[in-house]
Image 1 (cartoon, rainbow, N blue to C red):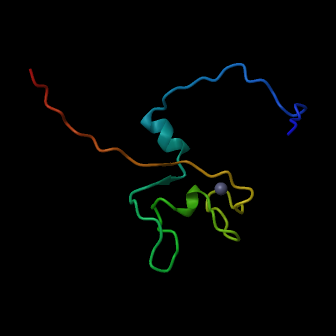
Image 2: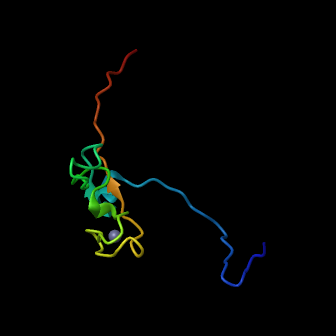
Amino acid sequence: MSYTFSRTKLIEKIKFGLLSPNEIRKMSAARIITADTYDEDGLPIPSGLMDQRLGTIEPGQRCQTCGNLVSNCMGHFGHIDGILVSIPNQR
Ligand SMILES: [Zn+2]
């Protein structure tokens, strides 16, 4: 096996960080509210884990966010709103 380095680049550093909830919502293509994936007809359930705004894996279907087919859509972020829980301060 041989490797071609003509199209490679050296990564000097990677920076990790956390996004705020508002930043995540701005980047999100869909709010996911159910863990269900497909309905009884085999179609993706809106706001489910296979929501078509997140991209598509089905040949011939277009992504509802960018309009591309599976070969040209890289996929889109979705988000799940967390549940705020009040935890009493115990001493
Ligand atoms: Zn897309």
